[in-house]
Length: 217
Image 1 (cartoon, rainbow, N blue to C red):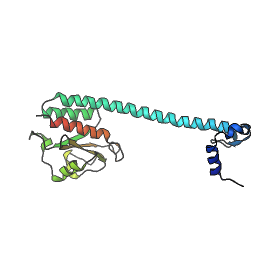
Image 2 (cartoon, rainbow, N blue to C red):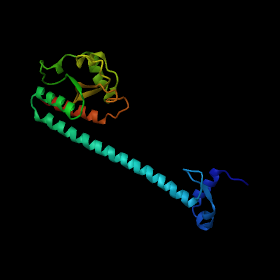
Image 3 (cartoon, rainbow, N blue to C red):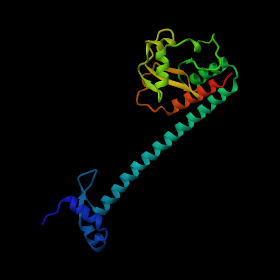
Image 4 (cartoon, rainbow, N blue to C red):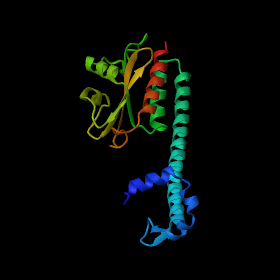
């Protein structure tokens, strides 16, 4: 009677004492080395497997440490931005501080805002330039910030000048108790804001900026 490999594997999993009873067999069974053609004993094969698993775990650990350090750096930058936004009581100064921080600390070369639904506005500021209903709909519909190579022409025009060199964009809704505007970010680097990137930090940025601006009288 012949048994398939799955049946043998199932039997061994269900009977872990098998090799306790037939320990001498381990020395007589040889299998192929996973990284070469030579034959090795089962115990050697197990050591190789454990080494491979250890290598994978080490790589995952290094990756987690890397992401942890990156998140720490971003967290520190967000903290500095929060301090800047809380420092000013005049909206124009707060916006200037925001633009400076995003450019110098976050290395975002182009940032524009359009604001509405605020208790007070400064008509002289470009951020209060009237926007179309389409922009309001976009801002309201964004559950998460958008990242990618395209934005509507109206938003692209906000950056002024020659926008043909802008290759990637992010649209971030600004919210407090309600949506108070939208922030658009742009870069000449097509990979700066790519479609598959995580948007958690951008969402936190939008919440921070929206709340800070909404509470400036």
